[in-house]
Length: 325
Image 1 (cartoon, one colour):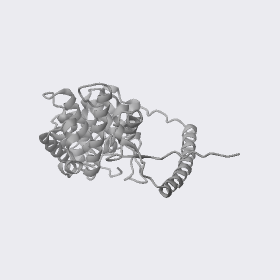
Image 2 (cartoon, rainbow, N blue to C red):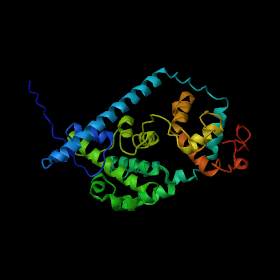
Image 3 (cartoon, helix red, strand yellow):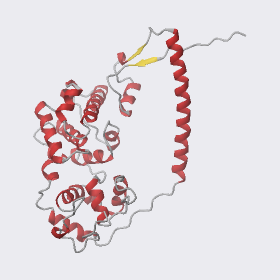
Image 4 (tube, helix red, strand yellow):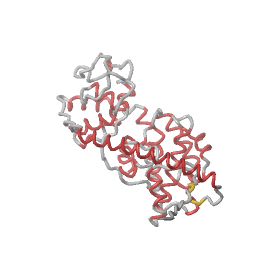
């Protein structure tokens, strides 16, 4: 008996930078240009054999990863569901006190936060893009630094077209010194490419940002906090509570949640705080609670050395004059 073995030529993927999961879906659905995927006709037999060996190695690694993933899924299924957080006593009085302290709106978030870039004087789709880019730049970056970078971008011209045209290195220098500016420049370039391809595939003349939380979080460099913030600010659709370091810290100080990692203070999980807050806080407060607590955290309830003597709720705050958190 003669056995024939057919060897498929490996494909070589050509791209300017690695794409996100959403972008990979675009490529597989044919939304990426045909010349992005080409056959390597010039491969020699030794090179091909080497590629096949590497392919077998990758298959084994994929099998191992698959087994690990299945174990994780099985473990997750057996994990008990979290019990909803009960409504804390006195929270309404505390919230009223915070609202009184924040009435002046004199914190950095009030002057330079992402909401500031929702400009109704420009086309809506451009306005929403500004909010998205501002949110993408905001992580690990102080509000004034973020606002300054946004100012430079807007002066340059902040549209999908201009972001597609600008060189990635030039973009990085334009947004510098925001935190991780090189990565963020790459994410912005990837994002506008994805948005452009999606609009083209759908036959749309206007390129807009995604209108759902699920689509936003699929974009490169966009996490849960950013996606929630963009939904709230750009689309005026409150889908959840935006929890940053200030909201996480103050919510634990007020005993509204119990999510502070005492064993490793530098390793915190804001998503746990979001889930516990959403258990009991009425939805009408989900949007306003972020700027309220962020501003309080920037002016009075500081990470280190909170100004309890200047706080109007010090008599009812369970952590007043305490350095536990």
